Image (tube, rainbow, N blue to C red; front, side):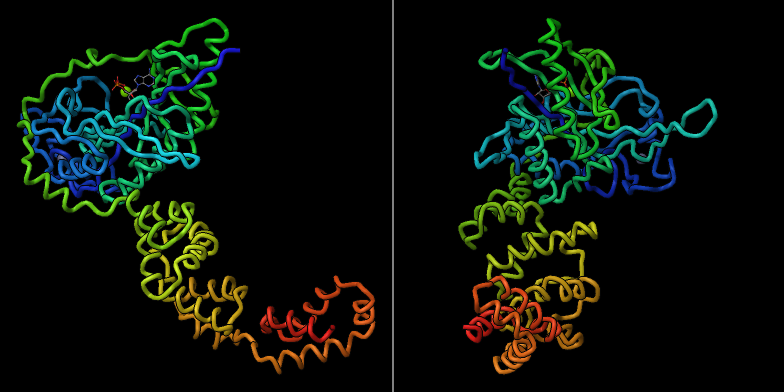
Length: 477
Ligand code: ADP
Ligand code: MG
Ligand code: ZN
């Protein structure tokens, strides 16, 4: 049987976190009453003039710099003409032959191997409104609050070879956008959207196959699933003697399939032409350098620094640097005296679980770095057991934000690390368990667990388990 490989290129739309729209002063706030955030410019009245949002340009340049793009010294807007009820002007203002950013790349790591995915271009454009098909009447509604919201379109080279790589690329891009603070990266709410261009070719063939463009991938969960389905579908078409046709397909997450929507439009169908109502953009070098100087430490650099500087495993560094706030939280805890490996381990094994349950990021809870550091020193000093720390105490910090030492005192969770006291408890249990002691001495060593259990019960779980084990073994021998 012939072996095939997939070729994938992604077109990602990122909604920019500006206060106002791309070409007017309307608010970009989400969730308002329909059509309350509109004006003559964004509802497409004749005779009005758009004015570019400078912040949106700055955000796009910032993203271009963070993804190793060249920033064009001369760039301009273009009209992309098509008709749809959510586009009252009859055209979308976008960029075409002179985008603001070109020729960059993002590095992804898969199974320990780094790979560069080329960025063809990043351009600015405006979003369309939203058609609402609700109610029983023979009509639909149009909400234009979203019309004119600033978007970046980030187009990748066809460098991606598997759905896994595509998901990794999306994750990395999202992380970068969030580090920069230019997009919140929320796919479920539509502020980050992805269209996937997918084709297949026999392994070894140089030319690309015909691609289908898969739209409507509206959740991170579905990035891989949608592409896996599409690749299988195309292979089946070819294996059965057919040909893949160039078309636009819709991902249906309920059915788990892609369905043909329309034949693929070509650029010339849109009658692109330069936007006559907006001046071209000539971003000067000084301003670009100024923007460059505001770039934060990016995820790749942070990851490297965490591995070499703190000696934490790659896996931990990946997880901690995925979100900027996590990385900062980790570093704050280390600065406050926590040992890097132990802090990392606690965040990943004990804290992430709770964040997931509460659907929060680490900076949005009552647990602060100082809590963790003092909790770790209580464990170190033997003042509390790590089991209690991970359960009752951590729960209480999340609930009330109290300091661990206060919780330990209030709840009487102080661990017994006094050898005399522990020995007393051991003696009592052994005296009560003559039969078991006999059996243990005649070789049934499993009974050690029974004794430990009884002692922990007698001390209400407060005895230092390590000391119980040591002292018990000494006594029994
Ligand atoms: P359009 O805007 O019409 O979709 P573009 O030339 O901008 O066309 O390409 C869009 C995306 O398609 C890019 O991400 C590119 O990498 C990808 N692409 C181009 N050719 C192929 C192909 N044969 N297989 C998979 N992806 C492709
Ligand atoms: Mg396209
Ligand atoms: Zn407006």
